[in-house]
Length: 481
Image 1 (spheres, helix red, strand yellow):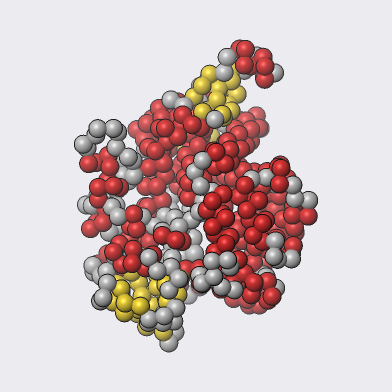
Image 2: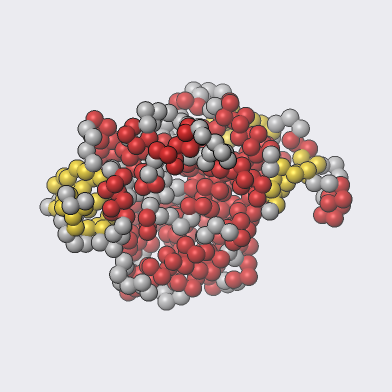
């Protein structure tokens, strides 16, 4: 059995066990220790209240040195004081990133940069590929990679180089194999080679770093990493790319699949996106120097955010149905949960996201169905429980798409809103249908083998036809705040 198949088997067994038997916690002996598998929201909440004792940070810090290829002294600096010292590299860096990624003007500016990048690249794509077939994963992956890294790195974005983009995804696909240290030379030569190409590009970016042309997020990271040599800074930033892209791309991909596979949902999303469109006047066109032969339309991001909660609900529901991660944590000392469950020091705790997300006791009898309104806030004065399932039925700890508690992903808002903005532009511009020879949307399978990711990519290629909608070819699209 290959390592990939072994991991698929583990996920399948855990999912089947929890679906068949309603255990809040399950203890298994493993490698001379204990593995605790937890899916009860109450127990998950208890774990998240003790992030220093039941620590995700220690697992992450112990892995990052090998994945990044840090030198021993740099790995020690990065992991020193993890979870204990508020001024440690780890916790100080997390605070800075959470501050930089908090909802507000800075995030809106990053969204605008990402959205404008998508508008420009799709315009170029239309001129070169009118009505042509594309592999949907490769297309979405390229668009999200370029737009989101432009928002983070600014004008000198190293991912603009197609070779760096390709190298990153080679690194990403095999990044878990790098945990085997020197054995990864045999197990993951493509991942190691990809990592080194990305590191070289980021090192060049750092050597010519200009804070005036980058994002607040990148400024925060640079300030925190200044204790490291530039080589190790570049290696850390290469791994940070996984945080920017590795789960965002599959989330965007599966959202596109979900929307286009349901005609009524597609119509609904188009209506929501159209409500945020502003037609640019002739006077504004003249000021901007735009060609008069084309109409100009802007999607107002602030307007979109007002109706975006419903698009965001779609994104979150897609993530709920597609998630595969396990959120491993190290138990650093004996701890008793709810005066009932003793977790022994040195053991590992995992939260099987998929089992939690498919628990009917948490989500209701329709748990296996896609519900676009599951995460939507109710309209003012609404008494319809169906439109507010998230607040009426589901504890916040039950949704594992971005982690939770002190370890929640700091880029959650940017990721969800960035996907929503991208989807809005795509649905306004294109009809997408499976290409001739493809079996259809419903036959598109998902890889389940990578437990380090929150979502898996599709199994195999899926070619589609991208067709500009009638009248769209005469429109120049842009974004504004």
